[in-house]
Length: 84
Image 1: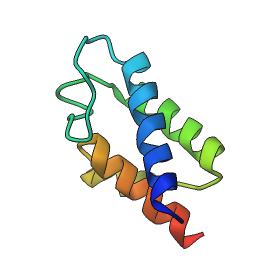
Image 2: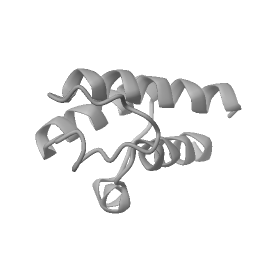
Image 3: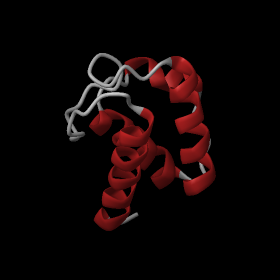
Image 4: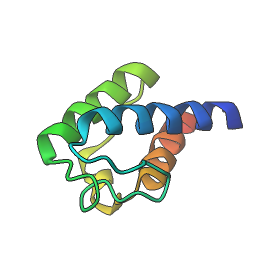
């Protein structure tokens, strides 16, 4: 998968997180999904399902335990997508 696909993943995540978040924070790759955006588990699961549908991947729930920032989530999606 190319760099443009990684950028596409990052853009989708930033766009969707800005829609899910109640805050006016500018979302960057370093934004903490939980503490800065106050994304709860329900919203996060909905986002994961949307990502799975969009990129035709399956993201194991236990893989999300170490994900805190937008970049870490994008890296995880990219890694799973690249392996498929």
